[in-house]
Image (cartoon, rainbow, N blue to C red; front, side):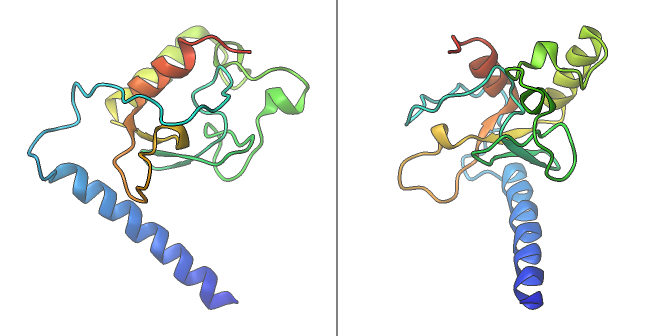
Length: 146
């Protein structure tokens, strides 16, 4: 059982390294700058937080279909949801000020964070490039929420 965990961890690291190598050497020669947001291929209910339900691994946010908070390291459920409040990035107690929120969002965009949200994964594709964080943030924060 221990070897299976080791092999899984190695596979994850290799996949992340491969992803970053592919981003710097795209076949079409285009960079990810100015990408347009693809249309979601399936509907998924989201909260008004671009980090809710994701795991963060370096410059990648990976959809987890749960209440995980990608602002924290390791698995940590959303503090707002655990306290009975609807998750909302703009009122999240993780940040002390709106300036802190803006700074963090800008740093995600500058670091070229990629988001692997299931509703944007092309049908039939196991491997894909994800979408830019700025596009994901606009999608999550700019839409109507239930």
